[in-house]
Image (cartoon, rainbow, N blue to C red; front, top):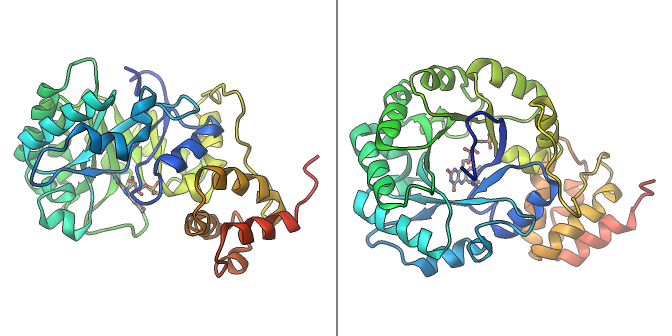
Length: 327
Ligand SMILES: Cc1cc2nc3c(=O)[nH]c(=O)nc-3n(C[C@H](O)[C@H](O)[C@H](O)COP(=O)(O)O)c2cc1C
């Protein structure tokens, strides 16, 4: 398996629509902190999707489904119709995908109204049918996994849903420790992840509210998991994934020109980091999105100064003007 090895711990970059797109994946995987990434969800609605949609949405498919740093990217699809999902998964493979993840966690009302994402957690037999249809369609050398919340509104739904996903042929399951109705309000509940994991024999990846080594330690204790997915923490505390690797005894991946993470909250310390991001993502709003995430966890203290800036040049000039000596 090129993604998750059941016996080896792993740190995985979460899919985040509008955030962890290909430029961000290119940038952040240069740290050497992530074993693999999952693409933002690609929605299958009234028709199966053709290969070109996948090539456009996940440009890494043209590069053996790896980021330029060589980190594998799994393609995530979302939808409620088994046959359309199966045909779309096959099209993704034709486009170059080397693994498929199925989204059973998206809380967005438009997605849920149209029979996708977390809604399916209310119908375990349908969830199983979708996993099975995709598993049967995709050649066995390519893993098919599922990502889900604890339930739609009932957190105990996870116990049956993980079993159904396993029976349908999922190679592993990622669990975000919250129901759909709990949205993104802290805390995330890790204990139910552990309970659900004990009911299946496939690996479970724990996810939700991991921001520090202390969170990781508690999550590890409560879930018994070896595998962890980091979402917002990848932006808000970019050095945390390295600490997580160290805590799990995982070496940093050996990359040629790794991206280094600033250690000080001062603007000058972040000049090179933002410079590197802007080289793959020139949009000022996306640079500000990163700065806003960094601000939420106190990694920087200059959000108020950049939030009204209108251009990438202005942001980079501000950071460079306060550049510090890194020696
Ligand atoms: C802006 C945003 C977009 C997201 N998009 C996706 C998505 O496309 N697919 C998915 O499975 N989960 C998506 N998620 C959920 C995350 O993958 C993750 O499960 C969640 O943020 C909890 O992890 P965290 O606390 O480490 O951020 C998204 C979350 C956020 C905040």
